[in-house]
Length: 206
Image (cartoon, rainbow, N blue to C red):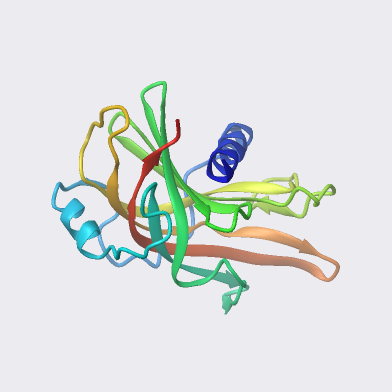
């Protein structure tokens, strides 16, 4: 139930934030090729690295290396940042679009999204703070502060198939770096970005 609630919450964020989405802008730290890649062998790589005690082994799983930077310096965010951080990986088809959402295993409003439609793909860092009624965050170039954002990313995504049947799991790999966004404080704006990478196997929300 918590997984479904989290998925529904992030779908809401996507619909709210999509109208403010734009192409990723900053210099990427990715040294490999970028974009979407289809490679059936990624399934075997994912399964080889999966252990029986992985969280969510009967539903979905992702182990992501997550880094957060503020004003160019790495910062520690308890529960969010670190290597092999556990996330639920869920997907949903809607209007010929495959949406894969990575939600934090503790249910926090912090995660990532891959949206694949036709031959295109988009990756985003998504977060929201419901208690932030005044709005603390905004994309660079956006005049309006909000309580949550959908931040575009530069990315390299590998999926095991181009098309999937209903209830068929998706195996893949994602590596991404968000564009910079601003955090409003009493002493001025903090420029922040998030980087993440890891393998995943999705489950479908029923």
